[in-house]
Amino acid sequence: MGYRKPRPWPKKRRPAHETMTLEARSVLAGVVEYVGSPHHTDIPKLGRPAGARQGAVTVEEAEEVDQEPDCTLCPRKWASNPQGVQNLLQEAIRAGQFVEPEKGFPTKVWARDPDDARLIYEAKSASNAGEYHGFPLTRTQARKLPIEIP
Image: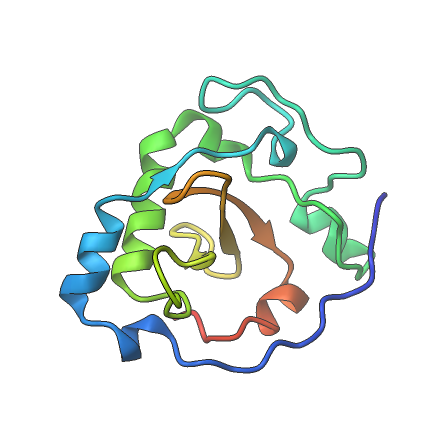
């Protein structure tokens, strides 16, 4: 399995729900789009073929060996529920589960899995503004987030 050195602990910053109005967050949520990434899936998803990166593992596999993986695979349930992924991203933005962006869109947004409270996803901005791809975090990675995810 491909593992890398753990991320450094980032400084805690104020979450957007403390620094932005609900109206501003709702406007932002209305213009984002989850586009996904083939690197985090081992089955076709969102009309794209599977293309998991070499060494990609499930969160369960990573936690079993207590390592921070280089790349985690998304649970397969999302492959057949693209609207669910989009809704999860938008709800996380409305809830302010990101650090207020300096300008434009947040670089990262975090959301708790609606069916498994132990699982937190990180959505990262893709190449186009307002587009995101996401992946699950291990519990160790989730503890290092710059904000707390309810």
